[in-house]
Image (cartoon, rainbow, N blue to C red; front, top):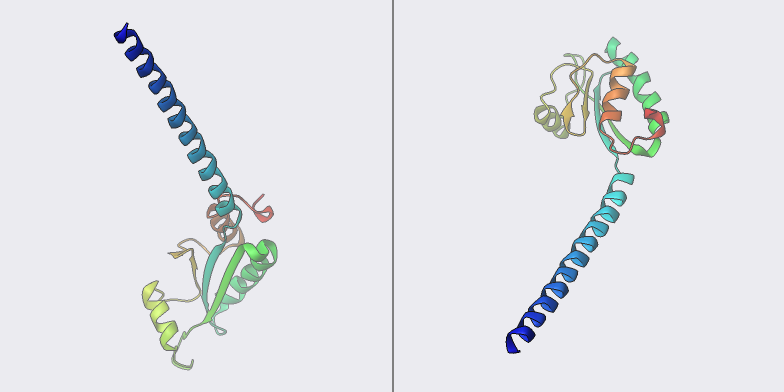
Length: 143
């Protein structure tokens, strides 16, 4: 008789423990889904654009960047940096020198998208595609 009661108690404990584990797993899943949706909806792309007024390629890239700012709106943060191209330009500030060194920027124009140097041809499609690839939830400009 005592053995039977012990078995029944063990079974009840297993059921209770299993329920607790399942509830805990469901809560973790639900909480992570809520956090991930909040994070993904607020995802923004950070862009550093090194340019110079005397650079012919930068003139074309300027129009692409301006189009991206209009198309992506507050989903992108663009920092435009006028950097030294030749001897007639003013010297870079210490901050610009540090950024150029950090991202290995030698020639202009140059783009840094989410901390990575953009290594493709500076065309509208290439730049927009690279921005879109960095979004988890794609904004309307990517569709």
